[in-house]
Length: 304
Picture 1 (cartoon, rainbow, N blue to C red):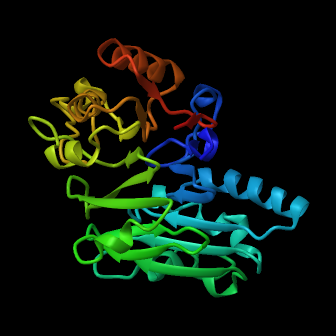
Picture 2: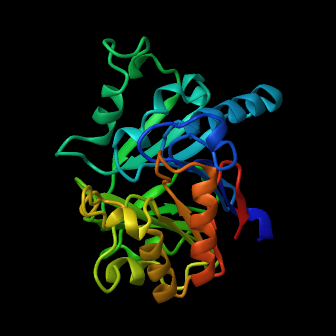
């Protein structure tokens, strides 16, 4: 398989809400969206406002080559900063597009219903029923493995405990861990291609002694993408502590990377109050402890 067959590109790296302007030009102001190319497939993780530019790029390519847009979309959770770009995702308007959409149930509500509610007539001019694309939406949990089988664009879902043999019959797989250290929980994803591993762990909060479940899940990851919203000073601030808010300090992220033996660490979900200068300093501090750490920025592409 070619080296460039497995890559990750960042289209949105903020948490909370978009923060455009001159103070965020270097790292970017769009909310979470990550593009992964794996074994010839397009995977999109989360649909914050970063997905709008990605969708426009895909639409432009579609107009040139006339090829249908086929993508697998995976939601970590359905908080606003991870879904607010979904109604503006241009490929969803094309009748030739095929979108396979996966994510968690929210308060016993199906993912499809949650996404449809973001386009209700009272808040948006186009409903989900007006979209011309074929969208296949399914809830997934930690017991599921998403399989990208050879010779097929359609992903399949198998049970991690009862269908192990079926799970192995693929060029790429996506495994799932449910983290409870975020309000209503969040899904952490691990993409595996040819023995290489990419772990996406946004909106997670550390534990005393390290998040053991996440450390085991991210064991020997080639790239670990980890929430790093706060500094320790912000997290422990006496007047306004951030404990229990569901996000990590960069120190927590480094602790997971070191314990898991990850080769590279990418810090993401940047706080809206952190401008470029602040993030540059955070990156220097993180690299002093873990030299292979980097701060995510819009346009960053990593070949795995």
